[in-house]
Length: 148
Image 1 (cartoon, rainbow, N blue to C red):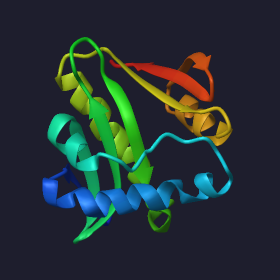
Image 2 (image 1 turned 120 degrees about the vertical axis):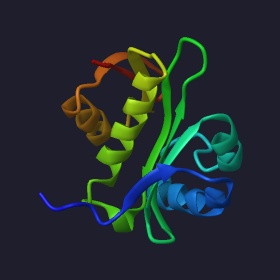
Image 3 (image 1 turned 30 degrees about the vertical axis):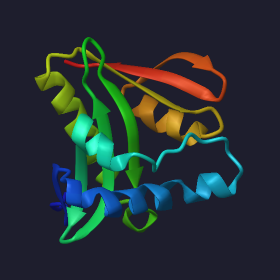
């Protein structure tokens, strides 16, 4: 397996506009399908300030990002987005790995997330990575993974 052509690093406030654009691009296909989505690209600067945000960068380009909340007893993967132009490069898997490592280092044994019921490919991908469905509410499919 060849080394990735991008680096993972913690997001900086200056990354907020590029990460917002990346998130918008990543979810554009789903929005065009008419899926009921939360405002996934809003508040990125606040997320960088208040949460743990990792980005995958190729030089000055942001290829993807993951937002993790590790407040209190809960670790929550709040958002994962990969720019469509970076698909197939392992960016999403690497970002999720960084988020899980961060949660583990913060002392959490479980990480939770919610995905959309009309994106069964996302549920299948997470299940392949070891996540389990823990419930459903409205358009959300709730999932969790137990950390080693």
